[in-house]
Figure (cartoon, rainbow, N blue to C red):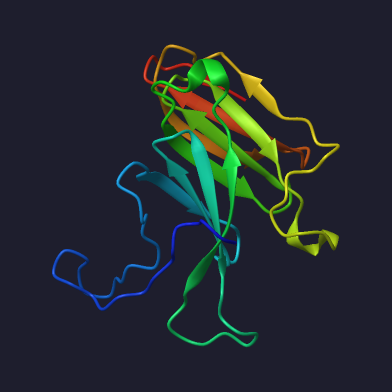
Length: 171
């Protein structure tokens, strides 16, 4: 996609540490990455930003793998709503393959769930579903979300769990 930040590999430097290498870098002084998660097999990266969006990168290795792993920019998922544009940095992002949705906690405390079509659906990878419903909850609004994760219950259903600095946990 044109206009997306470049995913680049580089040789390790002292600041990156032994065994680590940079695979994605924001090419902008305005947008900074704040958090990340991967899908189950690590073939997609979901990077939260200071602008309230999630940048999605996909593994660009040819079939069969190969090292080193590299990622290319795929798309941007806008999460912050108009009233949240100020201070809407993404605090946490969580994705689960079998749910096909990306959960995002913003700095405002608001939590959004954005449905994405799973890659195996035969449509464009990572595309927001037209029939999908974006969900949000304000239970943490005004506070700071400290944890966000998908949890499988004893009945097999997968639910989103979130917690905040005041000790409130929602499932």
